[in-house]
Image (cartoon, rainbow, N blue to C red; front, top):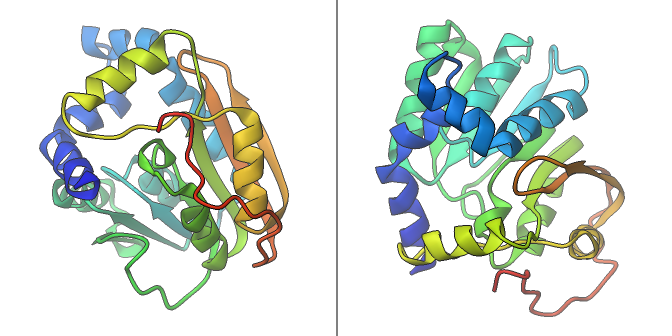
Length: 233
């Protein structure tokens, strides 16, 4: 099953994945900065597009080891909730929150975002590096809108001539599906999910992609796409 494959993949590679975000001067960090520039660019764009977060509540969907959640907590967010399907990712995030002295404002839950019961609405809801693995992006983005009372930020990997195919092959070996998007596809997904006001900020570094910044979720499906499949299907 794709869900189990994705969960197991990230659970087994939690430490390796987290090293992408570590700020050190070693050769590993240098390689990451050169070959995975898009990871750092989308981090910078996401924080910038989040605007003022002091005193706000934030839901980080697919929080991984909590790097975004910790950044928001340090920026003054009142409460940050992270949700991820990989237990080791959640454990790492909780440990880092304690080490950073922000555990009192951070909560991490191991669950599927589409199944977990959420009883509140957040000022900001984000999902970074999540739509890469979703065969049905519209319901997911719609639910992000449902639990937000402010901004929604999500990243979409773009189509490229070389990297897209290499990445798809690398993940296919492990049974993990991966999807890529053109700009027009992201536009259609956003409309179908009920967003009336949004913009796409291009990620111009290696791999390309888009940072979706949405507001004005209306709860209305404006475009009927049927069984939408992203370009990686």
